[in-house]
Picture 1 (cartoon, rainbow, N blue to C red):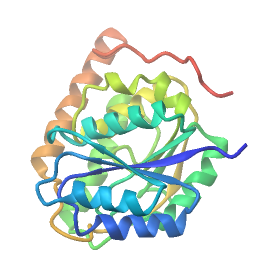
Picture 2: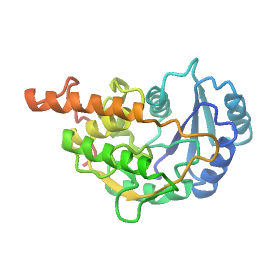
Picture 3: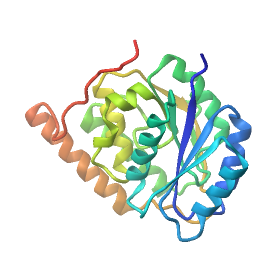
Length: 252
């Protein structure tokens, strides 16, 4: 039986990028559904999402009352996808930075994994025309988080990922406390601690199609402060302040 797959796309003021990304996803992975999670975008992205859904039955829309951060949007989207019975759930950005053309390779890898990470930092991975500062900040963030939490993956902060449904259920993603940049770190850490098979697949991370990046030094510093707290507590007490996720439903 073919696994039912959905791509969760959080949006906030992505009216220019969204139709381009949806069209590229439909071309690259025509058998995959799309779930747009819009946080009441003032630019009309939510209305555009509804229009796309009316024209393409594979596109679904979840409207949220207000903007609460990327992590909260993903958690809402994951919950909706699980309730709809999808077997494989993809998280991706709607700004065009995650190439839809890379999705087939990520989906192929899930045959041998529970979590697939689209990685900028493994062989074959690449980024767009980043400044030296942004490059070093991103690399340092992954290296530091890996060292503090004992994670072996090279790209710990990237947000282009594929989860088997049982993995998301097992790591209790609805209990994840992080709301922004740190959400990526916490979900990967939970999956690793639960013993799930994690594979990294090279991707090219492009610059967003329109507008400016929402990433800043302040956001990264706040995330690394949280990672430091987790790492110190783990070393002192053998566990962080959140309990280790259960392993029920793990595929063997």
